[in-house]
Image (cartoon, rainbow, N blue to C red; front, side):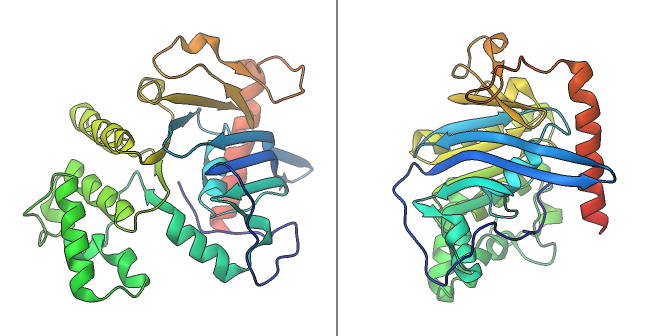
Length: 288
């Protein structure tokens, strides 16, 4: 699950943003570590990762593989200990907090497994929340929110509360909320995890439709069958990325490791203890 941004940047951050020419996302030698007693958990271990505008990429891995840590860093909810992260031409380590929050608001639309809708607000009110934070006038925000509700197939559901909607409809509201600010990237965290199989197919078709319209989509999942529906599949194990052929191709061709490493893909016996340690680290941070 996504958590609040935490930690500090490794570099000193001036008050003004510094632009860097890049892909939509470019990460180089990214590392994240967590102390666990006498051990250090390498949640991310020298990751190189990039996403071009308009790509549909899935990141797939089991619990404890490092995908949640990578997701939080992509979403500017956490910061790496080492390496470079450039988002939409901005080196995030060089941004002041206000600039970082503005970049997150402009560039990333979040979709969560548990929908994260406010129960006391209607579908329309939930969708227009990001616009309210931007100071958009109410009439304009209402019109924009209605347009995106219609886009995800919920025209006429404006005044329904979340408890009056099915799980699939609630997730459609969440997707409309993610889209309403016209972000560069939709970052979806296990978006079908709380849905039945039929509704999961419908939500995946919606993501594919958005991609075909030019939207950049990054979807995090533990389900390899869902992952294979994307244009590109990236697997993560033991804090290292596994390169893969494009979606719909033989997943056995994935090769774990990072550039310049000779390590073979970790076996289940070596991945499991690291996965357990990362899970303990995340629990410690959540309770702390």
